[in-house]
Length: 189
Image (cartoon, rainbow, N blue to C red; front, side, top):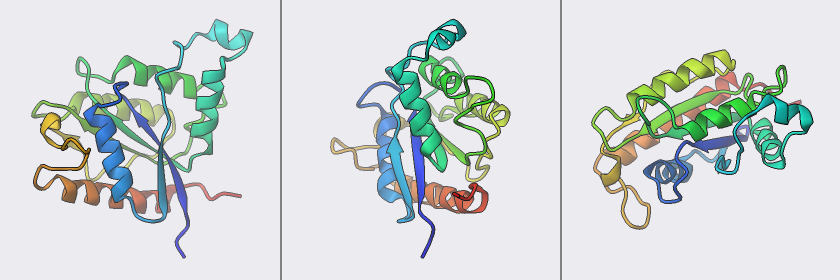
């Protein structure tokens, strides 16, 4: 029997009906049986401030760190804002990486899918996020790269994938991530 893996999914867009959330949910439906994908919400995280940390981390920060810390791997699904990641996602990365020496991200296998309405599919956000993950010591899936364009035309009203070829690509991506997790995840003790 294959080992089960818990995957924290971080969606960079805060909108409940965002195409990135729809993509995350589609990946969860397509995931192999040994992966459980769960969205970890970031919208309630106050901006990171070390003074606040020293006075006592807010409940939302503590919840977020626990949820990410409990995961075996992390999947990021994000739009691109101004050729980078959205501020809410950057803040979540900062919150999860603190206090210094206690990062919730360290050594967790990661993958990135960027979804945007444009033709280059969030290339800038994807690559900026990759730079941060190197520092966070997260081994990140290299192939297939997932820059998904034409995001507003991928999903039907029910959230199902409607654009031809997209489901096949999503399946290839999530299967590759499952294999990556199996090879790189730190064994549970």
